Image (cartoon, rainbow, N blue to C red; front, side, top):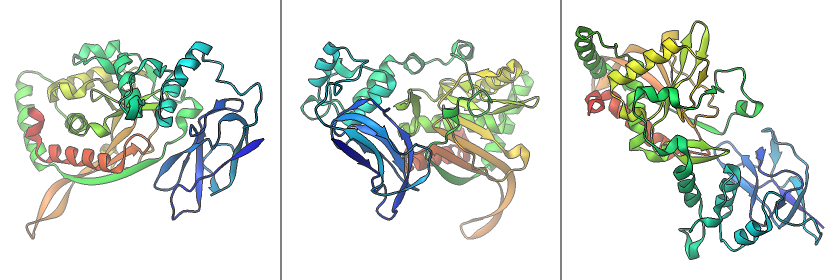
Length: 378
């Protein structure tokens, strides 16, 4: 007997949605309530859960973001008694038996599966010892070498595993080019106090032949500190799932001799403005096309004369801060017009990893640090 998997209503005001991806393949055994696909509407995403336990017999609609009417049949689950209705082949009988005795939520099970993590040995923090999503996230952070130990020294950049940057490399895999559901938030930042502080700092470093601190260096520092102040927005990819990052691993978009790259500064919140400037100069001098990944990205469009940018976000980043051109504008303070140096910034983030409240709080923290820049020297 075959049971249909139907397109759910993602938003009560919308009568169609987009099938973003299948989480299971034809022939996979699925349990009732287990996520099998991911769908999205304009303002929300959700999982499609298996209506019954059985085998995903047929996928009738391919993922790709096309509009699909609510209640349309996406696939079929074979639910009748049959010898092939058994746990997936990658689990041994002992593992399957142990897993069956471990209560676990569907979302936690999906995250563990996508990360290749066996949750059988975990003690759940949910009701009656049930393993929930936060338990899997904590376990992944604890085991992940890239997120487990702080690394504040500049030389540690060379020890980070290097990969081609999906956003800037033409060697990207097809899956990395699919944009996740994303949100754009904008803010205008006054730069008068920041520029005055930068001038003083650069006067001091000039006498010592130190690196010149740029506006981008300040933006990286403010963004890194903002991610620490709003940890709900400091999220990293883990396989096809997400975990909370311990450090602010901020990548910087660079253009060098016509090539583009985005090397990362691990634990950027531990670096001073001068150290960020020195690290960025080192990265430019290295001019490598193979770059560390990071979880957040800063891209400066100001030198190109762009006032505001709405770039598309792709993996491995879950958030992207786009800097616009700094220019003089008329602002009103206490009812009195004034001329100030202002820069528009746009925060783009992966809606599956970061919600709008966390994104807005991150952008507010960044704006507060840029406009009150001496907080970056603490």
